[in-house]
Length: 95
Image (cartoon, rainbow, N blue to C red):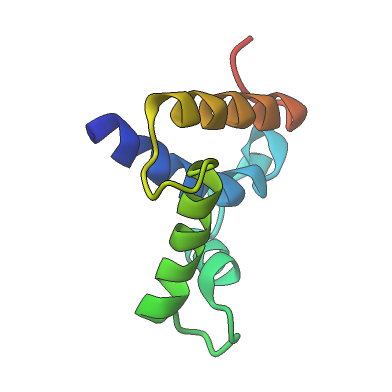
């Protein structure tokens, strides 16, 4: 369960991480601005609970590829492979 939680958190943050310039851009990114850009669906400068949860629900639906309401080891392996592929396409990942 802990691995699933960590993986789910990584998947939620991955769009933020992938939007960072390669090499860090010489400074610390503005994580607050990145968070708002990712989650503030109505652009009002605030993130509601619903705005925060909606991407999580969509991510879970993506992870639950067989639609049975649960994410199993095979589905997690597929997601891990997708993440590795995305990281490599963006110049990250294992070398």
